Structure formats: C-alpha cells, structure tokens
Length: 238
Image (cartoon, rainbow, N blue to C red; front, side, top):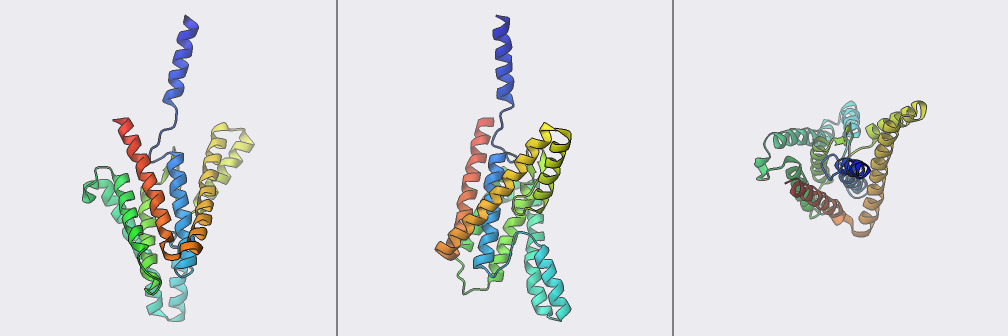
C-alpha cells in the first residue's frame, strides 16, 4: 500500500514538471526561430540582399555611406534601424496595455500584429522599393525579439543567432568541464533553436525561389500556428 502511494506521488510530480506550451517553451521557440531564419533568407534573396532581422549590418552601412558623403543613402540605410527602435517601443507599450490591439494577452497581440504585417508585405511587388519591405520586416523582427526573449529560464533570441551561439557554447563548456547536467540540457536547447533558425533559412530559400514575393506568407503561417499553441495553453490554464 505504501509503495503504491509513493508511486502515485512520483507520477504526480512528473506530471507537474512536464513542459507546457507557453511563451517560454521549446516548441514555441522552435517555431519562432524558424520564422526568424525564413525572414532573413527572404529579405536577402528577394528584397535587396540584406538581413533585416538584426541591425548591425545596417549600422555599418550608415557609417560607410556617411564616410562617402552619401547622406541621402545613409538616411535610407538608417530607416530599418529606426523601425527596429519603434518596434521595441510598440512591444513595450503592448506589454503594458495589450488592449491597444483589443487583445487581452500581450504575447498573442504581438503575434497577431506580426501576422498582419507579413500578410500585407506579401502583396508588395518587387517594383516598389525594397526599403519599405525591409523596414516592415525590421519592425516585425523587433516586436518578436522584444516579446519572446526567454527560453524556459534563459535569455535567447529567435531573430538572430549570435547570442544563442555564445550561450550554447558556454553552456556546453560548463557541461563538459563540470559534468553539469543542467548546463548540458541548456546547451541542447540553445543548439535546437540555432538549428531551427538554420531550418528556417533553408525553408525561406526554398519558398522564395519557388514563389518569390509571397514566400513571406510562410512566416505568417508559422506565426498562426504559434498563436494557436498559445491559445490552447491559455484554455488549459483556465
């Protein structure tokens, strides 16, 4: 009888610790990282050979154009940077009051906004300046980067890989040198996200070469699935 009670307690503990689909879950992180890789591949192949997710390259381009005295071009290169900054501000405003978008949950509100923008981007033809599209995608990347920045209990990014690669390498080193199981799990999680970003880049290349401008809708569809996952989790919580 005592043995059965112990087994029941152990099973209940296991159930408590099963990962749920939340804004910090691995599954959602995988989907968002695929979106990040897809968007970078899309803007590079279809929209002027740039990576719109991260702004380091744009800052460098602004400096180069300013050095050349091309102030007009420097201003154009700075537009995605300003869009990224505005995205951070908007994300923070939504966190404070998500009713701005008439949606009670800030994470869901951000996903809905991302989906709407990317859906519109798919209708913008190549005959229109790529700057408009890159500004829009920089804004979307900023929203996602600011709103989904924690993986279980660790900081991460779904729109770029540099920080994830550093964190993965650091955790792997700790796991190897100190035989730390927790660090090993963390390293695996980070490498899964990095691989997901790579998968997204592959998918983005495949879609872009296949259907061109509308390839960005692939990212929008993935975000719809992300939204569904969050909605299911909220209903379970209720």
